[in-house]
Image (cartoon, rainbow, N blue to C red; front, top):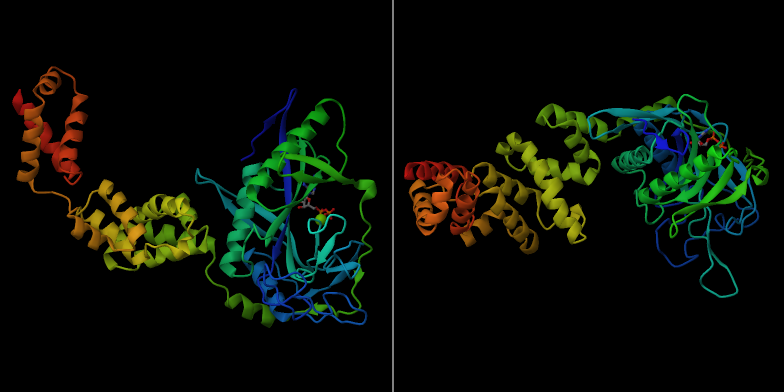
Length: 491
Ligand code: ADP
Ligand code: MG
């Protein structure tokens, strides 16, 4: 799926690797019992350990370890029975310990892979190098006082999973699909809440460019991007910047960059010479982490159905296209909703494709417009199922069904209630439709002459008029048949 970008002289290929930071979903921090709740008053969730008071000792949170193992299994990765927590030493105002506890040589999760699916039905594997656990830092607040910087340590010590990919990604779209897939897997597993706005999932993007077939070029790393849109923008800007330098005879310095979300540009933060030497060493306060194979197996057996399995199941049982199935399984809420809809009535099994369409086009667009999450949808799965039944049994037309859905959405009523109340039932009675058509033909003698004179396109006009006359309720097929019949008889 390589897509080249044009320079002045050559076509170039992007080479991209992501380091994703995913906050572990856990009520308490990695090495302390403080709460991880988002949005609380600054410094209201800070224990003596998180504030790095002298003599305080970290205690491993077993739940966070299980969450990391679960995530590793979800990424089709090897779980390491032996891993080590290291100190990564650097000075920063929001890091009271003066080091971050992380994993370096011995991460808890080793090599894995995730699959991304393209619209054309093809797919691609992105290899994962590792997943390791580490502590988050605090947060400097620069906008609270004109002359002072404050620090909020609520986030200090919260567990993060860093997921490092091989540089297998080739386009900004692939980068977007990759992080979307990771997010989806972690959310199915319930190991990360996936909330990118709140920073629960963010990424450092490494990017270099090369002429196709060449060795990898020198990369730059863009730090801390928290939206898929920004990730794509930053990659494209950075690739173009590197290409311009290379084509004018320069070379790329291995820099760490920041992305300005307002200007859409990257700028260097530090270069390789200024790179930190973190002086990693095993944290003497923590023993190596050993997990028995038995424990790993126990965690494995607790894992729910993941998006890829569910996707294959949907293809298998409901004969959906690979693309439809991947849209349906991208978010757990969506597949849950689909399952609840199709299981609400035995007869609905045959109409999977129609259900998918109504969920992913009509219902999603109403939810978007009103800024409502699917989990809070005013249209219940059962009611959507009923609507699909009314459509598939020809009781209402697809066009009327759209209005009915809108009304269901705003009133919370069922499809059946609305159809009965408003008398929207489709007219299939031939004599009734015939009457309407006769009227339309009578009212438009000139048009009839033109039609008979060869202006075939006018058929659409008659259909429209008759449909309007029936208030949209006439069965379109019957209407069409009768109309053609009648017009031809006029001849
Ligand atoms: P470091 O230890 O300096 O962070 P890593 O080898 O762990 O370096 O790589 C970090 C990230 O950079 C990985 O996601 C990897 O896929 C990516 N990467 C490595 N080499 C390149 C390259 N030449 N171009 C783009 N990305 C790269
Ligand atoms: Mg790195």
